[in-house]
Image (cartoon, rainbow, N blue to C red; front, side, top):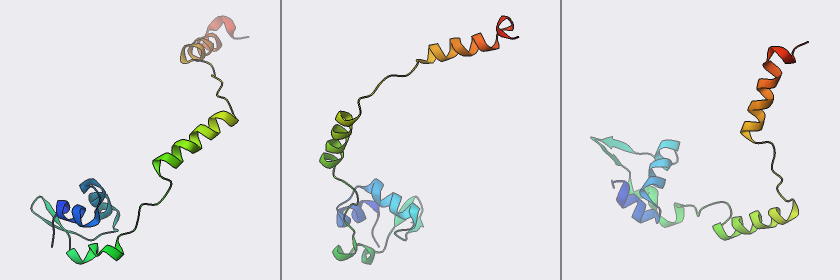
Length: 95
Protein backbone atom coordinates (compact mmCIF):
# COMPACT_ATOMS: atom_id res chain seq x y z
CA UNK A 1 0.00 0.00 0.00
CA UNK A 2 1.22 3.49 -0.83
CA UNK A 3 -0.05 6.91 0.16
CA UNK A 4 -1.23 9.55 -2.30
CA UNK A 5 2.22 11.15 -2.75
CA UNK A 6 3.90 7.84 -3.50
CA UNK A 7 1.10 6.88 -5.88
CA UNK A 8 1.50 10.21 -7.66
CA UNK A 9 5.21 9.56 -8.12
CA UNK A 10 4.51 6.05 -9.45
CA UNK A 11 1.91 7.34 -11.90
CA UNK A 12 3.85 10.49 -12.85
CA UNK A 13 0.83 12.59 -11.91
CA UNK A 14 0.08 15.15 -9.22
CA UNK A 15 -1.30 14.10 -5.83
CA UNK A 16 -4.52 15.99 -6.62
CA UNK A 17 -5.01 13.87 -9.75
CA UNK A 18 -4.63 10.72 -7.67
CA UNK A 19 -7.26 12.02 -5.22
CA UNK A 20 -9.64 12.73 -8.13
CA UNK A 21 -9.08 9.21 -9.42
CA UNK A 22 -9.97 7.84 -5.98
CA UNK A 23 -13.09 10.02 -5.68
CA UNK A 24 -14.25 9.07 -9.19
CA UNK A 25 -13.74 5.35 -8.54
CA UNK A 26 -10.96 4.88 -11.12
CA UNK A 27 -8.61 3.84 -8.30
CA UNK A 28 -9.58 2.02 -5.11
CA UNK A 29 -8.23 3.27 -1.82
CA UNK A 30 -8.55 2.64 1.89
CA UNK A 31 -8.75 5.48 4.35
CA UNK A 32 -6.39 5.04 7.30
CA UNK A 33 -6.82 7.94 9.70
CA UNK A 34 -6.42 11.00 7.52
CA UNK A 35 -4.47 9.21 4.77
CA UNK A 36 -5.64 7.45 1.65
CA UNK A 37 -3.76 4.20 1.06
CA UNK A 38 -3.76 2.75 -2.43
CA UNK A 39 -2.54 -0.70 -3.51
CA UNK A 40 0.77 -0.35 -5.35
CA UNK A 41 -0.44 -2.86 -7.94
CA UNK A 42 -2.89 -0.27 -9.33
CA UNK A 43 0.03 1.79 -10.59
CA UNK A 44 1.87 -0.62 -12.83
CA UNK A 45 3.29 1.46 -15.71
CA UNK A 46 1.18 -0.31 -18.33
CA UNK A 47 -2.06 0.37 -16.44
CA UNK A 48 -1.67 4.13 -16.17
CA UNK A 49 -3.48 5.76 -19.06
CA UNK A 50 -1.93 8.76 -20.78
CA UNK A 51 -3.83 12.03 -20.42
CA UNK A 52 -6.71 12.33 -22.88
CA UNK A 53 -7.66 15.36 -24.90
CA UNK A 54 -5.59 17.99 -26.64
CA UNK A 55 -2.30 19.31 -25.34
CA UNK A 56 -2.17 22.90 -24.16
CA UNK A 57 -0.51 23.98 -27.43
CA UNK A 58 -3.21 22.24 -29.51
CA UNK A 59 -5.95 23.82 -27.41
CA UNK A 60 -4.42 27.30 -27.79
CA UNK A 61 -4.07 26.84 -31.56
CA UNK A 62 -7.75 25.84 -31.78
CA UNK A 63 -8.81 28.93 -29.83
CA UNK A 64 -6.69 31.17 -32.06
CA UNK A 65 -8.16 29.58 -35.20
CA UNK A 66 -11.74 30.09 -33.98
CA UNK A 67 -10.99 33.71 -33.08
CA UNK A 68 -10.04 34.49 -36.67
CA UNK A 69 -13.08 32.66 -38.10
CA UNK A 70 -15.71 34.55 -36.15
CA UNK A 71 -14.78 37.85 -34.54
CA UNK A 72 -16.32 38.54 -31.16
CA UNK A 73 -18.87 41.34 -30.97
CA UNK A 74 -19.89 42.66 -27.59
CA UNK A 75 -23.51 42.52 -26.51
CA UNK A 76 -25.29 44.90 -24.18
CA UNK A 77 -23.59 45.59 -20.87
CA UNK A 78 -25.08 44.64 -17.52
CA UNK A 79 -26.00 48.24 -16.84
CA UNK A 80 -27.81 48.47 -20.21
CA UNK A 81 -29.83 45.37 -19.34
CA UNK A 82 -30.65 46.72 -15.89
CA UNK A 83 -31.83 50.05 -17.26
CA UNK A 84 -33.94 48.27 -19.87
CA UNK A 85 -35.51 46.06 -17.20
CA UNK A 86 -36.28 49.06 -14.98
CA UNK A 87 -37.88 50.87 -17.90
CA UNK A 88 -40.10 47.85 -18.60
CA UNK A 89 -41.15 47.60 -14.94
CA UNK A 90 -41.83 51.27 -14.28
CA UNK A 91 -45.50 52.26 -13.99
CA UNK A 92 -45.12 54.90 -16.72
CA UNK A 93 -44.10 52.27 -19.28
CA UNK A 94 -47.16 50.04 -18.67
CA UNK A 95 -50.28 50.55 -20.85
